[in-house]
Length: 455
Ligand code: GAP
Image (tube, rainbow, N blue to C red; front, side, top):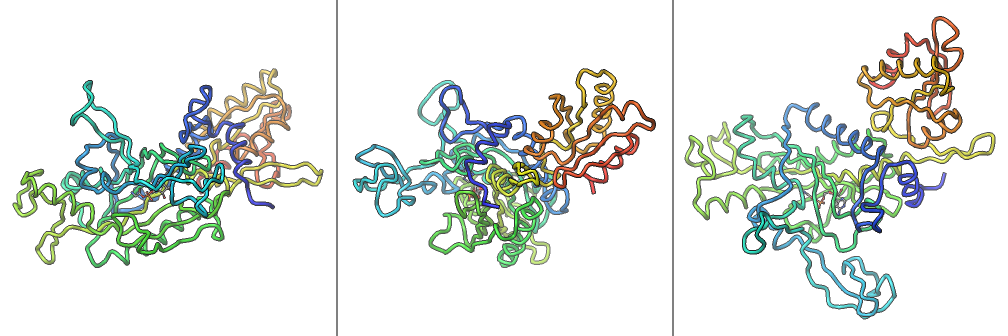
């Protein structure tokens, strides 16, 4: 089968209600998207799978949900005010703007002119006024990464949980970047979500942990359905490293538009904790009251063996939720030619990611007994905790199957005349991938589905 194209995904996402351009009715806000009825489910399922793997299934990670509005000092000392920039160039002829490092052969990608301005550095952070009076110091930034609040709350989390290295703090949340050229659907956008872990280790053990986390994260993406051929780990050249990084792997995925970064796994050394500590010492403030004077303003840990304080090194796996959604959609999108010659579009999402787990279809929507049994089944299945179960009463069974294949619903349960006429009552269960149908007794449905979804 041919590779999935971006057009196929954009069309499916709009038609079926996964993703819409923001402010669509006003012509759209560039680089900003809204997740529709199915998109919100898929996104939530992906985030829940990440949280489960990174927090619940481990014994060495705590969670955090910090504010988006960020104190300017945090982003001054993290280096973002000075260095979180992209080179910007203008085409003198057509007046379009581009990232200078994305220009090929010195030509404007829109009109082909070679008359481009010298690149100048453009800071990607969004600034906003805090309080009613504009100007002066009354501003904050929308965070460009979720990571910084993990560093600035490090002392509070350690004191609250008594954690020792190695341990991590995980966070999922919105980040904002004023990208010069947002593009490729939800791949590069101005408002997005990140799933980030900052994992604090003893200096000297960091490079081993970098390898461990690279492997762990690759395996997690495979478990979300990404294929081994399409996901590669690329060790970044020193010259291309971010301002905070000592060593980085980019986990790159073969998106419809090309091989590009899905997640970064970086060794940030003691760059951030060190910088925020330096600021505390410069002002000589006791940011934190602690019994041990030496640690007073330090974002540090006490080593029980050496009896000394040390600033831990940080390994950071950082993934974008939108890029994750795009990758799993692109991997799952399949067009199959049936023996009849018709083409079937089916989204072969992993079960745990599917927006709708089960569609319960009353074969006749005006037959009250069938409709009642369908609603009873739906309400009972909801109690199993498998996720979203919905009534599909469009009235046409063929259309219902097509729709649920296209949105990736793993199972359809159909209530028909036999269901209400015979005892014990039975229903048909249709499998999305095999299209096989089997008759199951209603009383066995719950255990059948639990077995299917939760094992
Ligand atoms: N805290 C480290 C950090 O933010 P990054 O490589 O700049 O590192 C991490 O971003 C991840 O966030 C990327 O791998 C990508 O998945 C996602 N991401 C970054 N910028 C994005 C954008 N403009 N649109 C969508 N996702 C983005």
